[in-house]
Length: 83
Image (cartoon, rainbow, N blue to C red; front, side):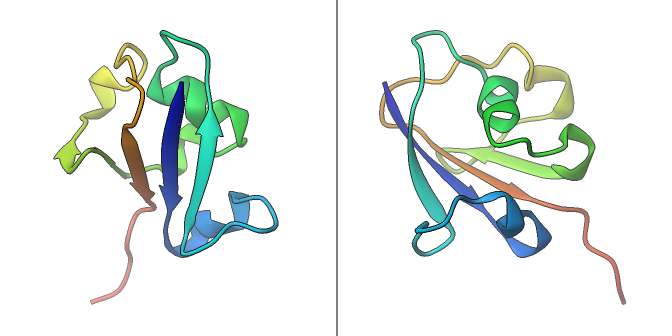
């Protein structure tokens, strides 16, 4: 299956060369989870503060079991600091 993976701010460092507009298209096995996707790009789980799939927030307690579907768009943001 194909999903789009978007990384923002400091997490952009985990995108492969050639990624465009913070985004990379990814081929995953059926039944892959958000954590499987993150692990495949070595994105530290503790650095993904905000995780959104198809525009909907995915809480930390669901990321290990949230099964992705073909065509999903997953976006991650790190914790934000400042004030």
